[in-house]
Image (cartoon, rainbow, N blue to C red; front, side):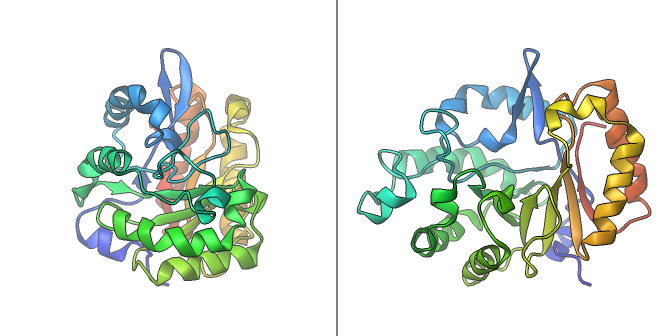
Length: 270
C-alpha cells in the first residue's frame, strides 16, 4: 500500500504529521477549524504563534462552513450565502475574501509544511448533501487550493450527514480536479472506501479528554487500526491540549506510531 503523501514526503515533509487541531488562547480552547473564518481573523496571529510553539508542521481548516451563519463562517461568496442560495444565483465570488485567504495560506507554500483543508462541516447537512453545489464549487476550490495544500479532507465528522456512497461520490468529484490525497474526518472508521486516509476523532467528546487514560487512548487507537485498513491521522482527543494528560496521551501515541507505519498524523503538543 503506497503512502498517500508520497510526493509530500519526497519534498521534505516529515511524518507522522505534527498537528494540534486545538490550541489555547487566554485560558480558552480554540480550534484551527476557524483559521479562514472571517470573524476569527483577530485570533490568527496568536494561533500561528501557538502552532510554532507546539512545533506543528501541519494544519487543517474549514473551507465552507455555514453551520451557524453568525459564528465561524467560512465562505468565499459575496453575502455569505448558503449552498442553496449559491445555486439559486448568489454565486458571486468575494474577491477580497479570497485574497485574504491567499495571504493566510502563503506559509504553506513551504514544502515542509502542510495545509490540509477540510471542505465541509458534517453538521451542515444542507451543504454536504447538496450535490449540485458540490459539482459547482469543488472544481473552483481545488483550482484555488491545490497550490497551497498537501491533501484534502472532504468533511468533518462526515457520517453525521453523509452516507458512505455520498462520501465516495464527493471524493470522485474531487479526483477530477486534484492529484492530492483525499481523506475523511470521522469519529468512526466506516468511511468512504476510496478515501486515502482517515482523520480520526476519538469516541468521546474531546472536551472530556482529560478524563481518559493513556491506556484508553492506545486501546482505541489499536482498535481503529485493526478495523480500518488504510492510513490514519489521529486528530481529536483532548481540547485541553496543553494539560499534562493531553501531553501524556500525545507522547504515548507518538511512541506507538514508531511501530505502526499506517499512522500518518498525531495530535500535539508533545
